[in-house]
Amino acid sequence: MRERAKAIHLELEQKVWIIEGHAEQRELCRIEARQRHKSLMAGRGNQRETSCRSHALVLEFLAMKLKMIPYRLRCYLQCWIKLPWVSRENALDFAFSSPIRPGQVRAEISALLDILRSANPKTAMEIGTWMGGTLFLFSRNVSEDATIISLDMPSGDYGGGYPAFLIPFYKSFRRKGQRIRLLRRDSHSSETLNGVKSFLAGRSLDFLFIDGDHTYDGVRKDFEMYSPLVRKGGIVAFHDIATHPSEIGSEVDRFWSEIKSLHRHQEIVSDPQQGWAGIGVLYI
Image (cartoon, rainbow, N blue to C red):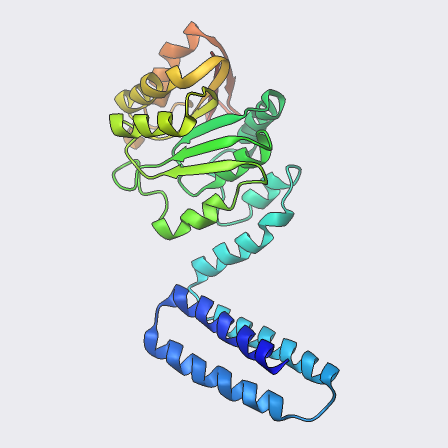
């Protein structure tokens, strides 16, 4: 009992302070944990009482350390703890009330998810991870054994969506049987394209979601480079097809107006005057 309680205390302090990275405070934390442990073990009472006190001390210790973690990181940790209980049915509510909130009109992304559930893709890719909201929603609405690739440029006007320390968090979105591959590279690089092909290992994409570079040349290049990976009968979707104010610099609507007539398509726009968002779906 003593050894287990001691191990729990030391494990908790190490995990928390690995995140914080403060060496001096970590040493003080060790001393404090040992003192509390000795005080607990010196108390009288039967084994059950000691066990209860030990659990209470562990919870007190963890709560104290969580308060010392930066607020946003604490939000991600709380989000991560809840992930195993998030089902397909409550995924939208969870995503829109958490740090991974997608930059989407809820009704629009919900309509796209309905299409995905019907198609049940086994291979999916998104260009533009940003805060991870669409990645999470896709993981809950594609096949249970799907392979998902999420590509995001780590810097630039349409990059820098997430820091490297969130990679394990985003990978934890996968359900049992799924694989998630995160790439932090320029989507317009031939090296990146070859990396995607290598990961797919000869398979085609069932679903491609383009939400990266919003300039006309940028979105066109994403489509021209990655749409050939989509199988016949697959789906390519674009975000931000609604007309944006000119000062925003989003030109996805211009490319969409050119490409949509070449394929069977569907437009998902809640309000033509909303000035942002909108999802365009091509059936290849």
